[in-house]
Image (cartoon, rainbow, N blue to C red; front, top):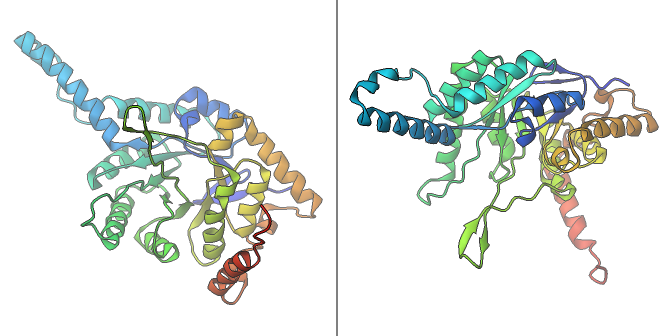
Length: 333
């Protein structure tokens, strides 16, 4: 059985990749994921705000001590690069690259153009195999148009592309008026891969405290549908590598994503829910399913149900929409 896969120009043993999660935050977790059989590992996003907050706290600590003893001011040299959180994360990345045989992909989430590029240079120097740009931003300003939001994202990709030579993937949210068109513009700006789709974590409300509270739910298989559709529509119509994420729990979701054209299938929720060793179960299930249906390689399977195989993909999707609604039996369920 040949499961060899290429993603962002990287040669992978198979298409199952560990997405960014707490499991890949430290070296021990990364090594566990590699031992479990993940073909590549994405580290959790390095957030510009998180680094700034830690650096600010560090600076305040230094200043407090220097005011207490004026002569102590000379003990602390002015840092020439960010300190605190970034240094620790970069050191973990560097150790992981040295210790692992599988590619380590660094995820970044910046808030300013300079924040993106500075950290991108750091992770490139640390030896990351690629960078995943996680453009998780909720445009809460009602004066900011969708066009302006997309322009900012395109500028970000372009700046990072100029700053580093590593392969770049962009992790997108699904709420775009024309995802396929914007994906093409991201490729023009320098993206070599697209990760579909990011999950946005909306807060809940605690009725006792009357405050917004974080409420994390691991993804479920029913959430596969949106990414499944858009990967089917983009497969064969973009030069970018396509990574599927969200909704993966068993080998069934892996098979479905490959059928519509995904190059790799990423999962975090399944590994958090079942443990890192679940990666081996996903691979084993994929191999058994392929063997039972006469497929000898992932390439034979990939894209067999992509929308590009029909003349009018938009009409095909609309036909499915109409069929679902008109075929629903109200007397059931």
